[in-house]
Image (cartoon, rainbow, N blue to C red; front, top):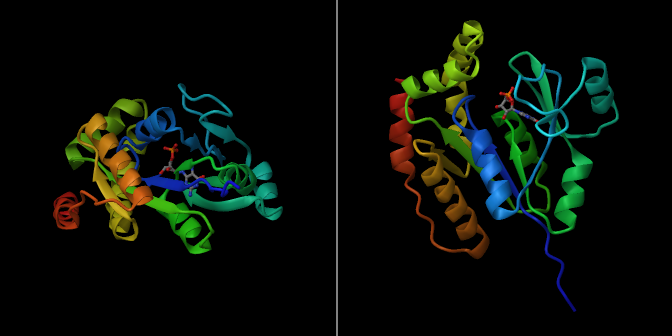
Length: 210
Ligand code: 5GP
């Protein structure tokens, strides 16, 4: 008789622009994680694909999903609504497939507090410095300086939530950062030893917020 093995949930959060989307894609490609596709009321960016990067919906549709209790979690982020619908996630976990979420600290808190019967590992991704974050955000939203300024301000507030995550990783090099995450996931699954220095992270956060 085979023992049914549920999938695991991995949450990646970060202040905007820390490179988390690339890390999520690498987890999907290399470790066979299903990416949870969120619903959002914000407009698509020029490089985004509908129903692949997000389900882009209007307010009315989003409110309807809230009313029908379809969300596992949802939150308001930068004046827009973002949410994860429950059914696709649970279906995958039940089939033994792993799911990775690219959601903010509010969503991470909400999922954590649900205490679902699936293993959950949470990561907070930080940029190496405020200067590099500013450069990354400027390259992405070059046309809109206001968005960059707004997200830099938000960064100072977001970063304070690092303490609620299982692990915090610094994205100074995408391959190194990915392999850190991958090793920590493997160690969590196999109860192996973890290469993780929380004091180092604490000092890094102090520099970022000074
Ligand atoms: P962006 O607009 O840059 O794609 O995302 C803005 C923020 O919303 C990011 O921090 C992203 O992780 C977060 N986000 C995306 N989808 C969801 C979701 O379904 N729920 C929550 N709580 N946050 C989300």
